[in-house]
Image (cartoon, rainbow, N blue to C red):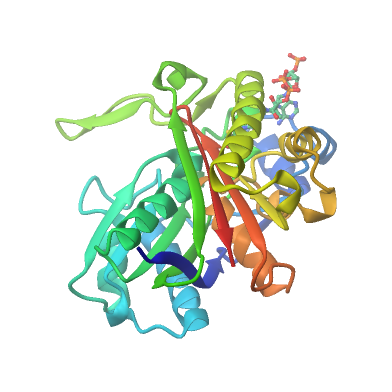
Length: 324
Ligand code: ACO
């Protein structure tokens, strides 16, 4: 059975950078009070990229996909599977993956979206890995992309300061050498209320609340508990020790969650990739953006063992172990 090997990656961030100070000044005009000091202390976030109004998730995804295809040296027509992880799709349908396929000029292969919020990329990566291992795909494009700014309530300071927009992508190819060597996905739907955007479209109208709502402290506790258990389980199942991990690429929600998790797992902080200070939380895009950043700056090297982890609404979480 072949392995799925990551042969390229790419990322894209919308050009508009909004610092905490700029965001605080903008929110003040709406009588919403926050500060750089509060945001940095509680989250580690210093800035985020925000897409211009009307920007679609597929546009960001296509930019990231092109960068990943260039990096891999693969032509769009060689792709026989596209999976996009997003909670902010362009349309109810078709899927954002179909729009990406058309935008890239790729043809013929399967294309669909997965919805697991901030765990979306590890869910999509695990799905593509299963397709490749089963011989049902040879070269897959896996993308996490979000215009999360479109589902934020800008009058709710407890959530709107936390997120940004962006996209990240990897190209996976069947290979006789590892590859993705382990994956574990989980969900607990009974915890849906800790993080949700509980609106829907019916009879041409948005029904319910279209904005993201969160119980921050509950999310913090669930994230740390589930991610540390998941890391230990995926390592045990894959026959590697936590100490064998060269790079951990966790979901970039909050630097305090990342630090707490790293300490709990006994990982050297210099081996944990952090981009939340620059990107904020880009939901499904956060892991591939962080992974691409660390590949391009030379930290992640061929042969390295990388642990990617996602956690988010659902409640969902998951881990993927990759030999580069
Ligand atoms: N600026 C200034 N003050 C604020 C802000 C803000 N942006 N947001 C909240 N506050 C105030 C609150 O009103 C409250 O004031 P009060 O004491 O007068 O009532 C005070 O700060 C403390 O509020 P808490 O919600 O208790 O703050 P907490 O210390 O829990 O920090 C945070 C909030 C950062 C969200 C924290 O709970 C956390 O890190 N949670 C993890 C969740 C997370 O990171 N989610 C990201 C998305 S989910 C995901 O990706 C998995």
